[in-house]
Length: 98
Image (cartoon, rainbow, N blue to C red; front, side):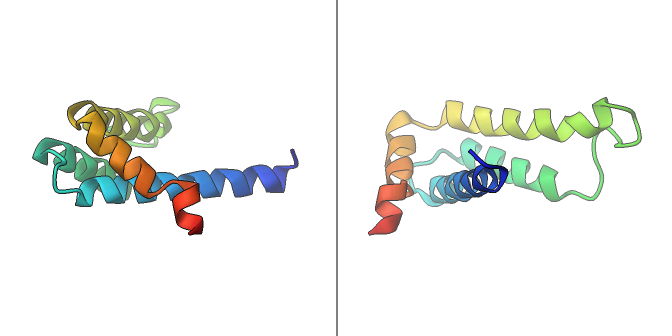
């Protein structure tokens, strides 16, 4: 697979994941704790400062790669599987082509 195709695939997957988290947050049966964790993940991404400053070698750049997925993972752990499946099917590629 060529580099441009890989980037297109990655961008498509990212759009799909963002739509999933948006649908999950909007779902009425999503627990408040999961919604708060999703907001924390988003807030940490757009926050102008970090818990670990970026000028600290390696660790400073990797904190977003650890903290944000951890918050998303915790949000998934407290969200019922039925809600996750409903949101996932809502944003599946087949559903978006209809």
